[in-house]
Image 1 (cartoon, rainbow, N blue to C red):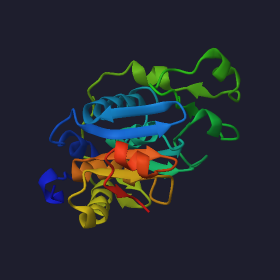
Image 2: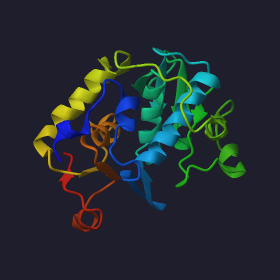
Image 3: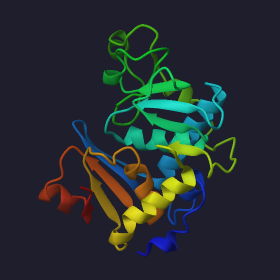
Image 4: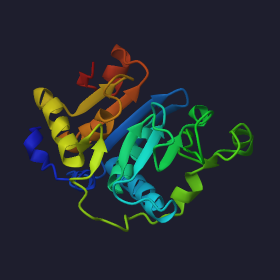
Length: 234
């Protein structure tokens, strides 16, 4: 499948909505709680809710920054795309300099300010009472704020020139994805384990290839075969 055939758009939200078949897999996560697969439509729905929450519930504007401490999980993909869909900048490991901080439950301890915790439940369910009791004071479960948002994004400005990550605009980050994917132009499924590209490639690869990404702590021959992984990122 040639990269150019996907019609990469100038901003990340447009690239997501331009995928040829929303029902096709976008991201699969293989974790201790089992396997979770999200289609492009599911990712678009989750990203829209996140973007709406950032703007409506947390008063963020395009250009604001979000410190992200979400572990290796499908939630990281949906949150990255949601943050970018709102025109905000992702700051991996960001702290007090950021306008908002989101983190996994295990990552929330020691972070400054009113941290918003992202549930690591396989289906994204809210934290239960026992899990909430273990969180530091002032930390809140962001799940309810996100779930109550509309399924379609309310504000849909072109964010192609907004900073996305590491000083790159959304347009430039998509182009980096195209450059990375070009040597693997015929691949439709990318396998990834935690590594230096983990902050952008899992979310960007499916946008520039129209394919899917599989996230796992390790990828052996059995996983590669069962998930039909054609390329494993170094």
